[in-house]
Length: 254
Length: 358
Image 1: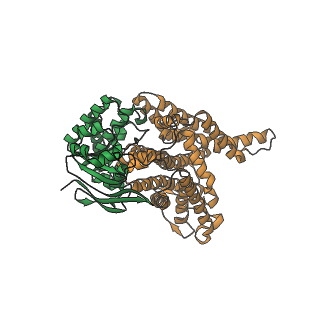
Image 2: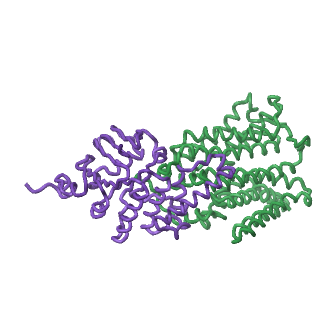
Image 3: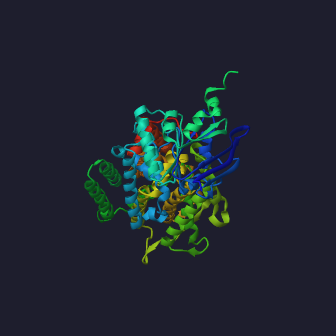
């Protein structure tokens, strides 16, 4: 059984068809990439998966349960975490607090515990902080844990978003252009980081424009163009696919 | 004499928040607490405690509003409505109005719960609103509630309100006309309020509030049920002013709609802005400064003016004076007198709000 399955997902905004019958299967433990020119519908698909948009038609099944009518917070709690194309950290909270917010769905403290700081709450807070520190260390930010998110260098902000996303112990991690704006060295580190994330048992779906990175990292690739899936396969298959070549380079001269 | 209380309390908080050592900070606050508890041994002037008990009620209100506006970032301009609900709870359930005479201590809980319930009633329809829009709706709510109390004459005594409220009693000792017992009640409630507000800030719920204040969409992606989290901010914030309302009504032995007009909401928001929104010690300082101006400085200025033969009513200039204070703060220290580190940073790097859906 695949971890995530999109079955003919369509999303329209008025007359604009942002996604048209897109199907996708992601197996547990895979690293899958979604590519396509700007406006192809990649972010729309991410937003449909995380419940920002309800699909106009089609089904999304995650971990055996339909999620396409669920609110975002419940989808997050069910095990889907994401990062954003334009970074959306909690700017005026410390890096550590950002990751601790990320743990929200895992925590059990009720209103009463928060008000009275019951022993159980204290123990949970200690453990939450400890885990947040571990995650910051995992992405290489242990030295910057007290800095405000907005004061971190750009690359570190991208890493912090990943740490925050991992904090909920997700089964599936969605990365929206994680390498955008990174230099070759940073990209190289990112590849290692994403592989390490997968080795922790997290399935990864990423949107990325850097073809070198996608070809190196992804086990399977889905290609979208004008809201439709035009190809799906291994990197080698996708690279040879005439539809993909046409979408990226234009049709051959007659 | 009364100045000493305010200035000492303000000075202690400001100094305590500046000292680097946690031990010294705790010692300062402990000393302040002890001094406030023991002050009646030295100062036997009951009118001082009258002013201080009122100040205490406003500290409590400011602490409550700080949960809504400071922590969760939900601008509420109708907060006086919950204060009114608390006060009328006491007015209707501890007076000859219906012949119901429930004890003060029970009504504290009842009023806190009722105010919280109305917090949810206000919160529920406004969940999708932000910033200015939310402010306008809450402002409307703040206008509606005193209007209802004014017009439900059969239950609330209409514009005259309800008078001759019961004197609370403590183990059989009636509070009577003295202000001192109320002073101790407000001290206890402030201690409770401070502890709860601090606990909330350092908790799962407090972090969720800050997260929705910073970026609601991202907060939802963290698994935060923003509906529940916002409603809990409205409810908890309102419950503080329910408590404040009961004390206020009991001390005055009167409730009437004109005590809870828009200006009260503005006053409390001004306290937060002046002191430093989101920062608990800052909020306390802000409320002390404005109550000092309001209930001590202005009346004394009036007395002084009439003593030298001037006929100026400074109290009627209080809006002008708040306005001047707020403009001054915005110009010279926009983050407030005693801001949280967060707030200071925010205002230093004010950027256009991000609203792009990623």
